[in-house]
Length: 424
Ligand SMILES: *Cc1c(COP(=O)(O)O)cnc(C)c1O
Image (cartoon, rainbow, N blue to C red):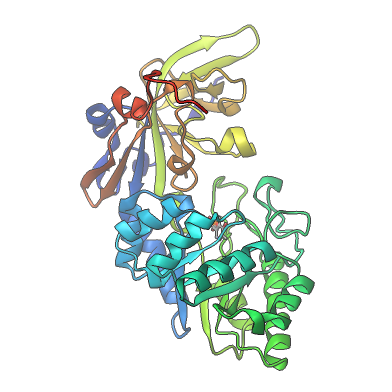
C-alpha cells in the first residue's frame, strides 16, 4: 500500500496526437479507440518484410471488422480473409476488391457460397469434403469455375490457449493431409472447382516460431509431393496467428522479419503466390478501450473497481482468461491498491482483472484497457441490453467516430411485438 506507481507514460494520456481524457469527456465511455498511425506502422513493417516475394496479405477481418479499419487495409493494397457473408460485404464496402478476398471457415452455407461465387472471390479455403462437393455443385449450376484451396490441418500444437488452437487433429478446422491427398487424386472430377491451393492456419496469439515452422514444413512437403504427382499448386496460404504483446513482462512476440524468414525458408522454390492472413498482429496493439470507474465497492474480501465497460465490449478476459494491461489515464502519481476490475454485467465471469495492482482509483476516473484493437469490438454483444460502444479512429491529432454509440432504438431495430400470428 505504501509504494507509489509511477505516472503512466505520456502515451496513456495522449495517443496518436489525441488527448484521451477530453475525447472521453466529449464522446462518453465505454469507447474503443484505434490509432491509425500504429496500424499503418504494422502494415509498413509487414510490407517491408515481404519485399521481393509474390505475396498478398489478406487481413483477417474478424479481428476488427470496422469498415474504417478495413479501409486502412484496402488503402495498403491488402485483401481480406473472411469467414461469413457479412465480413465479405463489409470488405467490399471498404473497397477491398473481390479478387483479394479469400473465404475461410468450417460452416460456409450454400447461400454464402452462392453470394461469394457471384461477387467472384479469389478463392475458397475449403475445410471439408462436403463443402468441396457443395462448391462444385453450386459453381456448376452457375457455369462458373471456383478457385479453391484445401485447408490442411497439420496436427501441430500451436502452444497457445486451447480456445484459439486450430491446427490439432482434434480441432474442427481443416482436413488431414491424407484426406487432402485424396481430394487432389480425385480432382479431375471437379469440373467447376480449380483446386490449386493449400491453406494452413494453426492458431492465434502464437509467440513461438517452432509450431509455425513445423506446420509450414508439413505444408511444404505436401506441396512438393503434389507437384511431383503432377498437380499445379498456384497459391499457398500460410494463415495468420502471429502473437502480440499483451503483457510487457511476459509476452515476447515473434519479430515480423523472423516470421517472414520462416515462410521464405519453408517455401523456397515455390513460384506461386503466397497469401498471409494476419489479423491480431495488425490491429491489437493499436487499440484501447476507454472506460470510467462507476464505483469502488469494498467487499468483505476484495475491493472491486466497477467500470462502465464489461464483457460486452471486451470478451477476451471472460472467454480466454486473457490478460490486458489496465492503466488510469492520468499523470497524477497515486498510492497503489489491489483491485478486482469488473464490469456491470450480471455474470461472475464479467471481470477484466483479478488482484490487479493499480494506482488508487475513485468513481469517475478514466481507465484505459490496452491492446484491445483485435477481438474487442468485433466480439461485442448486446447482453444485458447494453448498447454497442462507440469506436473512434485517431490519426495524428485528429479523430473520427467510425461507429457511433448504438442508441436504444438501434438496439431494438427489427424487434417487434406480435402483430399477427402465422399459421404454421
Ligand atoms: C482467425 C483467423 C486468422 C487470423 O488470426 P490472427 O490470430 O488474428 O492473426 C487467419 N486465418 C484464419 C483462417 C482464421 O480463422
